[in-house]
Structure formats: C-alpha cells, structure tokens
Length: 226
Image (cartoon, rainbow, N blue to C red; front, top):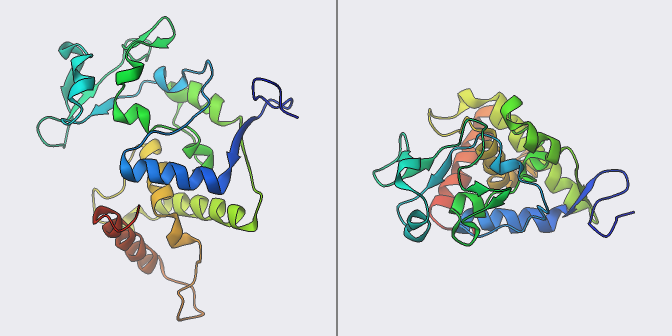
C-alpha cells in the first residue's frame, strides 16, 4: 500500500514501471533531456560532494553561478567547467534546503536520476554519498511484464561486466564515477539482453562482449540511437 505522499507503508518508494522508466531515462541521457524524479524534500544529490559539470553551451546557467565557484574541468576542452561543493559537501547553490537556481540549473542536474543506481545494482559511493545511498535503498521498481524483468537483468549484467572487465576496453572509455558507470550501463544494456550471438549457440567471450559495447557506443555517438 502507498500513502498519499507516494511512500509505501514498508518504507519503499515506488520507482515506477521499470521498462517505462528505463526508456525515458535512456532517452533523457542521449538527448540531454530532463528526468522526472519525485524528489519531494530529498536533497541527497545536492548534499553528497558532487562536482557538477557545466558545458560551454549552458550560457544561461553560467549567468546565475558566481565565477569564483567554477574551475576548468580536467580533461575536457576549454569552456567546460566544474562547480564544487562546500565544506559540508553541499552544492553552493543550495540555499535553505532549496536549489536557488532551479529554473536555470545545469544539464547535469536536469538529467540526474538516483534511480540509475538501483537499476544498475550499484551504490552511489562511500561515506560522502550516504544521503544518496539511503535514498536509493528505498526505491522499488515494478515489473508488469517479463520484458521489464529481462531489461532490469540486462542493466545489472551491463554494470557488472563494465566493472569486472574494464581491462577489455581502451583506456579512458569507462568512467570511474559510479553515477556515470550506471548511466553507461543503461545506454548499452541492449548488448546484454541476449547473452548469445544470433548466429551461434556458444557463449560470447569477454572480448566479443566488449566489442559489442563499443559498437553500441559508436552508434550512440553517431546519433543512430534515440
């Protein structure tokens, strides 16, 4: 049973139909869209020591953030910046528990959805991410179809493979950040829906799976997947 606030009596939070959530979230990540998360009063992502990336095309957002809070993003082209956090790990734009620039928040914040962690079966991080870990432990997806369960299993398998077989990928392809890793698993999950190649009964090798992941990423980069 779910209360009027959307919180199950068991303490779980309804995360929605997994298939519907997966496709909406994946589309938001691929098209720089906005996710729809029922945050209520939760500010876990705003208080968990995150560096927020802001691209050079986000001119409106940059107008609302003091320049002294920004610094060049390592490894990215000129114009890409990061906004840090205060001594408590809080976003400096969080004022009295509320985002002071919500209507002009960075794209990173617009596309962030902490449900990517339970979807991928991983934690947000260590002690500095505890507010998010507490939140993600409460999300509960539902599975109205066998396809929904198969897709969730595929996202799990993708995340596990990316973590356990990083040596199969070129240096720099896999992110070290758990949030980015979870998002990557969502982007390439289709590679893991069927663990066998269409033309053979044998299981694929790790190298073949990594090649399939790379091919999927190339399709994404070329705009073939939306």
